[in-house]
Length: 356
Ligand code: AOF
Ligand code: ZN
Image 1 (spheres, rainbow, N blue to C red):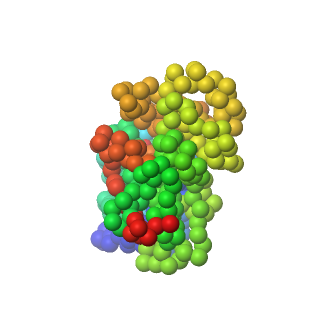
Image 2: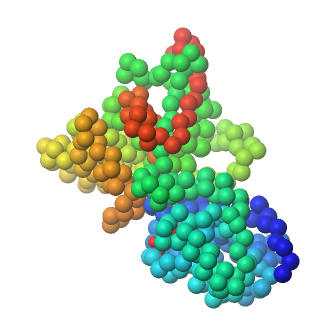
Image 3: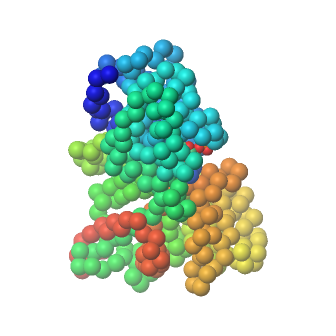
């Protein structure tokens, strides 16, 4: 067999497809697959939602033709070999006669790690990879974090004036970032996380919406030079809004619990506060707000209990894998001090004296 030189364009297409599952795959992986014949894509598939067909199966189910020995299947994650909510992908790949596979990264799920590749090789499939591993791992950093460490991937975002002052120092809202920075934040930060997290103090002072709003006019210039489609598409579901509110101080009028997307809000309270505020709990639950009871450990929530509640699927909640921590200052510090910060993004705005 002649040597195969994988083509990055096909792996990039897998990532674009994979990203369409953002917000829908719960605590699972974002996966896309393409079938290539003589340098052209002839089939595509992606993991569209939690519990639904994996990318490879979705592709082969939709592909009516015969897979030929020279066809190459690209997929950004090692094909699975376990019986989970759906049958193993390795089986259908072998059955349908796929002879060459290019994969992007090894699956961190211990049920699969290395075993998917081994199963394919034992069955005579040529397996090439990991190919474009960094890009693939970057898209699935939340999934990797959850599978390896049983907690979400955490990015902390701050806005700081160019002379180092922080907004909201005295509790009053202050606009530090520019419109362009805000568009970037929505497009590249909020859109690439499963949830946006703030402390209740920020909800009380700013009454934020914590959703993705695209500024169409700024989109294109900001996207230049970047792969435009590796983000959450406009039709995608909004990220969850996670509010840390131990004493359940949130107002029933706060936007995050009263707008049309109240069902995307997860309110974390102590069991004592939930018992004390049963009326409020009932109203919020009726609006679809998810209320999770987390005990305190010292002056903050018990981390393990918090992670468990956020990453574990229960009934119609399918879990999440990544969180963007947006504020305020106390919340940033707690995450940083506890060692849970994977990434820190600091947006530098105007000089403090020039702020409105
Ligand atoms: C693939 N292709 O598209 C995805 C994979 O509970 P299940 O059955 O959905 O299994 C979840 C695990 O399957 C997940 O942790 C990861 O190891 C793999 N996801 N594998 O070959 C896909 N989504
Ligand atoms: Zn699979």
